[in-house]
Every structure is written in C-alpha cells, then in structure tokens.
Length: 333
Image (cartoon, rainbow, N blue to C red; front, top):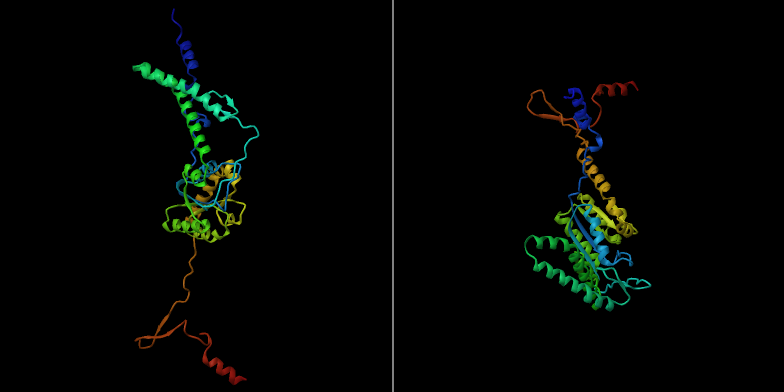
C-alpha cells in the first residue's frame, strides 16, 4: 500500500524545517562581530627603577612581565630597557607565617626543603625513569599511543624539576635587579645617573623615529620637556607611575596598582581608538590660510610707458576727496 504524496511531503518538511526559511531570514546573532583592530605601532619601554619602583609585595620579575603585557596591548614591543643604579638592592619579600614546600607533582606539603628534595628523588624521579623506559621499549603505533598518554605526566614532572632547580639557584645566591629584569627580557644598564641616562635614550629613540608609542616608567618631572617633544613629533606617550606629576604631560597615565591589576591592559583598546580618531580628525581638519589682501595695483601714465603709482604706497587724502575741496573749504572759512 502506497502512502499519499502529500503525507511524504509534510514529513520531509518537518524533518528539515530549514528548507522553509529563506537565507535572508537568518538570525542576526549568528553574524560574526567585527574583530577589534589590533594596534600596530612599535612600543619602547624605558624604566627608571630608582624613580618608579613596583610594590615590594610583588617580585621584580613578575612586575616586569606585567609591564610588558600592558605595553604589548598598545602595539608590538620593540625596545625594553631599564636603568638601574649599581647600589640598588631588591627588598626582601615578606615570608608567610607558616612556610611550607609544595610538591608540584603529587601535591604533598613538607615543612623543610630537604624533605621535599628527598621525596622528589625517591619517588618522582624513579617514576619518571620508568615512564621513559616504557616509551623506549615500545615500537610502532604502541610507542606513539604510549607517548601521547604519558605526555601530561612527563611535562608536569619536567616543570616541577625546573622549579626546584631554579629555587636551588636562588637560594645559593642573592637575587639582583639585573638578573630578575634580564629573566623577563629587559635589557639592563647600570648607571649612577638613571634619570639622565633614560632622558638620553628617549631622545635617541625620538630622533630615530622608530617607535610610535613611548612608555616611560618614571616619576621624574624633568622628563616633561621630552614628552612635549614626543607630542610634537606625533609619538604617543604612556607614563607608569601616575602618583607623580609627570602623567599630566602624557597622553595617558597609570599607576603600578592599575598595571598589576590589568586595568592598563583593559583600557588599551579604548585609548588606541581615541588616538586613531584624533589622527583621522587631524587629517580631515580644514585650515584657513589667510591670503595677502594688499595687492599691488599698477597705473600706467598717459604715455603708457611705465609704472606710475602703487596703491598701497599712496598715503594722504582718500581718492574721493579732491584738492579743490580742501581749497574751497579753506576759502569758505
């Protein structure tokens, strides 16, 4: 027994309701939102560590990393330099009341670092050697599957071993500002006059014209003249250390608390958009150039053989007053 064609058509349309809707009735929510334009200007970060120090509760390495994150939100980082006095020392970090050492592999806590090291060598080092031996003894597809299954544990072990090694190096020697900033990718220059060295380097960067945004991490008001020069040359300026008066001369200023909290990075798209709008308005700006109203009018004499008088140079009575008028008025008196 055959079913009527109308019933088959209704079932087909019910199974595929999208066939009924034309393409121009698609919901607007599926449309992809336009991506935000990423700044393309080159950014130079110049840091005077003596004039603008991060909070003592935050390690210098972490402060430099967060400063770089804020700088890269305004463009690609081209230069990062810090000027440090040779006698500068890092402040001691506040230690917690109950110091415990955490094993990054299994999560166990130990009161002494030596106990953590013994635990790591006795258990996790052996386990890691067994995993590597299993992978080496396998062949073909089994080797590939086993390596993929154990990759997470291997990477976790390597990260924990790296942290223990770096901690041992830090405990053996005293950390220096140059070492901490160097680990973060900042070029350090030891100088007895950090502010003067920063001013000289900033002037060199402006003369080269290789950057479009200059980020100054300083609190010296002597740099205000340099910020005015940067504005005249069309270079944007960002000042970190908003507690000082230097931020008034910059395009935008942030405090260390805002940089650490991520507010400087969050505000970057809106700030960059305002800069682009300002540049566009400057390009479209109509300027009135006043023309020279004094035109030289040349009168030829009756013979037509030369210049007789120039109107701007003619001084005396207006042209509508004749000499006879003055004589008549004098005779009348």
